[in-house]
Length: 99
Image 1 (tube, rainbow, N blue to C red):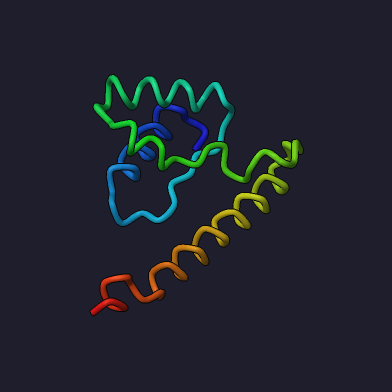
Image 2: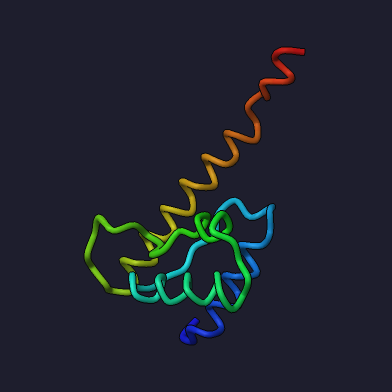
């Protein structure tokens, strides 16, 4: 969104879900640090929950800040995370293999 406070509320709720394979937030290192401070103190979040956050989304390899570039990088990152999550979910578990 264009509202950091709303971003923080949405991301905090997403991090509390255990069924979210990917939680990302667009923004700067400063925004991430501000969110962490708020999340751990005011929102009573945990370090483990915070550590699931991907921010900034789209990675850091390309320094281009044009919205279409950020959107493409974010989409690629989400697709990669989804593929990885799907592969893990479909792989046989150690218990099933031992059983």
